[in-house]
Length: 301
Image 1 (cartoon, helix red, strand yellow):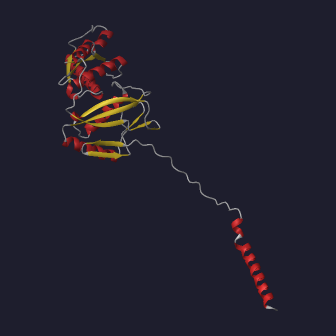
Image 2 (cartoon, helix red, strand yellow):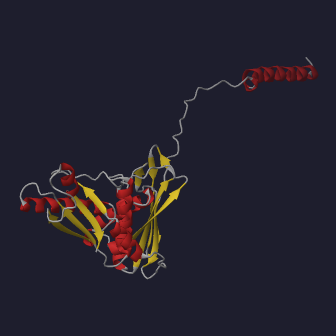
């Protein structure tokens, strides 16, 4: 066999072997890729939050928890989280250290929420509830003020409003011009005072809308006029002994005082007296007359 033939045979063998190897290993690349079963990954929806923020002189605190409220309610949802507690403790330290520093707590409520409180609106009632909470934690009451605003929308989860509040830092010296005629308001309150009537040995705080408004006006006056006092006078009918009736009339006055405190009037601004059966407004000979005499009357001193 000549060298030329041997050479050609070698080339042919090489081509054949290369073709076999290509078909064996490389053509798999041309096949359609096989489908691989994969587990479905569920991504949790983003949690709605409205961060609690305290940003002012000597404090810059933020956390994802907040003071929350149920819709149509003025009561803070408790318990409060540890992260909120840590923030308010820092705030208390700042206020105690800086007695001229003032915090205005602005509450918010939605336009379609119902206000069943005696405050001007649900937003102000929420701000007052937070103020009461902070005072219970040792905050200086004189450095806390409240405000309320109505909003068209707010962050919610279910029926819970997330942090419908804002904390604003101000100086105590800042004075807002007073345009209210406080003397006229006092005269209006005393000319048509709030009168609560009681069943025999019973009390009730189911106030009408008109009575609620009288509480609002009284709170507005007392909380804006320095050194003003609310006078709550308890009365009774003449059924039974006088001493027992004087005591019962005082209990009615104390009940009324507690109701006023719950609705924004400081206890230190309320004075309680009992007249017992001594100042009836109707005859005691009839059941209707005695019912009118079992009362407590709220006026401004």
